[in-house]
Amino acid sequence: MLHLPTVKKDLGDYIDAGFPILYVYTCEETKVDRYISSVAGRKKVLEWNGSEGLVDFKTKAAKNIGRDQSLETTLSFLKNGRELDRTLLVIKDADAQLASEETLGPSESSRVTALLKEIARKIRKPDGGIDATVIIVSSVLHIPQTLEKLITVLELELPDEEEIKSIAANFIKNNEISAVPLEFLEEMVIAFKGLSESEIEDLLSLAIAREGELTRETLKLIFDQKQQMILKAGIIEMIPLKESIEDIGGLENLKDWLQKKAKVFKDIKTAMEFGVTMPKGVLIAGVPGCGKSLSAKAAGKLFDVPLLRLDMGRLMGKYVGESEDNMRKAIQLAEAISPCVLWVDELEKAFAGIGNGGSGGEVTTRLFGAFLTWMQEKTSAAFVIATANDITKLPPELLRKGRFDEIFYVSLPNKDERSKIFQIHLNKRRKEDVHKIDIDRLVTETGGYSGADIEGVVSESIEGAFVKGNTELTTDDILGCIHNTHSLSEIMKEPLEEMMKLYEDRKFKKASR
Ligand code: ADP
Image: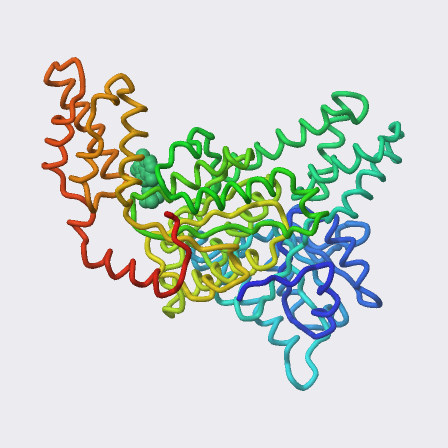
């Protein structure tokens, strides 16, 4: 399971325990430098970076090791071990050299990785290897396959509320800005959550440059910046809030439940003071075309927060580590934007192939681990709505208590629900004709139809009437369309029946009343 150790808690221990290569995944080099200095103790620290080659870690002054300062030459120079004894070797800007062979061609990347491998072996040698640790600092997670087993990834956690407070306080002191009221500072701290130290400092500087002081405008700036972050990352998409809870026909149990959670969510501070736990999220599974996505979309408006959709397809990267990298970015973003609803669409697609062996299977297994851990430990106000058509493809751990607050299953709409779905879609398009249409008749004729089937019938019959040059829509138009339609349950009767039985057996909650 992928649960990354963190720089703050674990860096010192991993160095002491003789782990040969640590990979610190962050874009905050200055902050990592501080941590490295604090754990170095009596060890020497060397740094190689892309612009200067080998430098003194503290002063960043170049060390002369000859004409060629490339990483390859530096590692060849260091590999005999003498120079490395009792040393932390920090490597920065090495993404290109560490990128997989697929992007670089075998020569360059494999020479650097071979040298790293050789050094790691010397560190690990059982009868007293060299006392050194290689620390790779990078903002991307490209781990060459050949080094996978030798590398331990550490994450630099984002600042917590206390740290944000002290970053802001330091900024205010260093820039001689007039102090802000405590209450405002607290609001700002919440708004800054999910941003890195340097992002926070940049935003504070920007606010000062614009306003000369920290004002309400600063809060707006922070929110705008968070929106920018989503757009840039591209794995998460921001969905406009169009659908509302009234657009869902039926699914009354699910709607009631969502309404209760919305009430908590909208007043989360008071709710938590009262003792309510932070809502985690819900898994909505079941028959395709019956309102799962629709419910996720409507939840955004209901909760009155941004709705983010996580595209699992885009998340799966080509390179080792890339998918996890994306998953982590997505999670960080969702936390940064929170309070928000994070809609994870077609969950089963992303997690198909778990435990299959093979490298693809391994990636999904790790991805899945990261997701599970996050769900388990999540305390942020990012409410997850995962939707899935087929839960038999989902690993059982996901369905255990503690991940989601509830699991609902959606089946084909019953009579009452079909009637509501007809009314919703007819009202949307031909409001003037609804009162003349015999909805009961339509309901009787559409047993086994999904919500999407019904929507299809409505839109097709309206188009048909228009093309024929009619001035209104009639019950017969719609009936004609129904008779030409193959409903979902006709097409996949048996799998649907099996699925329903499975949900009943597992005692998941029914979305319909
Ligand atoms: P899925 O369950 O596969 O996520 P969707 O929610 O995307 O299905 O449904 C597809 C479309 O069918 C919706 O956009 C909506 O127009 C219609 N639909 C499905 N279920 C309902 C429903 N319960 N009430 C109203 N419309 C529905």
